[in-house]
Image (cartoon, rainbow, N blue to C red; front, side, top):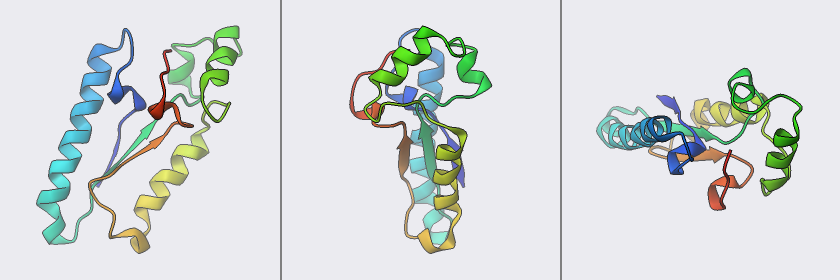
Length: 118
């Protein structure tokens, strides 16, 4: 079982309901991981940071100065791409990684360990 949460689970100004729902999802996934592990079922979460998608551009105008400034504030110096998130999901899908459960993988260019405001 895999969940798509968000770096916003750690907090995001003006995004209270969104942040709370994503944080709740992480808690639910951890509980399910404990409950389902005896049945050989793993449960993990991918929590992307700013990724260039239509949803992102609904908040930050595409190719705007704001988008460029946000990319500069991310430790790796760029915004995420869909492939970055897809690769994280593929990791959890691989049966070779069946010893990993109850984990949240922040795919956020390091923004989960620093401060970032959209």
